[in-house]
Length: 130
Image (cartoon, rainbow, N blue to C red; front, side):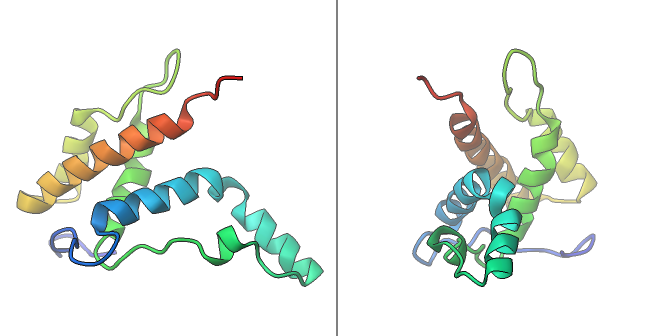
């Protein structure tokens, strides 16, 4: 992690999967495999079995995206929960930016990416109709 005052630069977009696409891919993996990944890896190691493809080929964050992913994980704990999951508030994102000294284009990118990740997370978290 970069320390206070260090910059991560803007969101990488020039490669396949760009910043947003890669973050959403990591979010989907984290949402489906994350809760079970450690246990599955341990079982495979004990039984000397290969890892399932989903885990062996888990998406990796591109350089420069860690800031945004860690921000989402931190801010995910700030959502209101009532009758269901609520969105991450603008105020929580703003406070995060202040606390981490995120300014300028990076701040704008963080707001946009957190909103997009949050919308995807809420979709993934909706109860499935039976």
